[in-house]
Length: 217
Image (cartoon, rainbow, N blue to C red; front, side):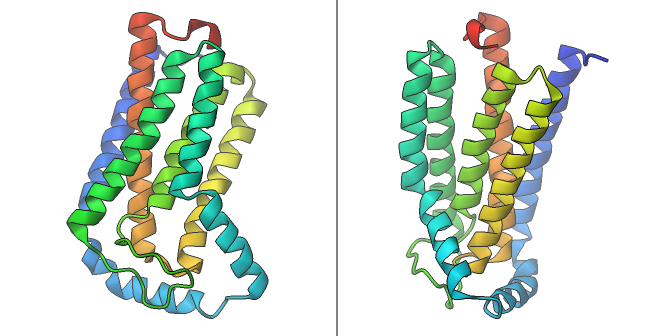
């Protein structure tokens, strides 16, 4: 049964608002998670191995701010060549906007990172930029895959599963390396999910009103 486009849009807006409110509330009451943060931080120190740490460090750099920026510019250029100008610009705007949000919130909250971090990261801790960035970047690419090849359920399920696994892996990576508290990861995921859903709503509105990137859908 095909979902009504208007109802789809309402559902997207509701999800977007839910993630936004969730992030605001979690940020306000984040201090109440301090005891849980400490327990998780101490636990991860007991599971470190040389091999796992090497993999975690690779993930840290592979999905860092610079790596995502380079990948976004490259993919945006490819989309531009394929006459998907709006998708290209949206990807750049989404990634850039997310980075700006994270940097601003870090400056406001000024949460100190764990002292036992394996990799020394000088910036503030909350929210996790890696988690938010992975959700926005991988999530938007997954959305583009749905637009291009999403007529079959297999593509949707596979792309969504990959998206979920990447986000889960990155989230655990931040805690494993002790560069973030658990609450940083939760906050980053909520922020990334809000911004991703907002960007999708924005694109869908443009597509409906202006018939943008018509050949890609």
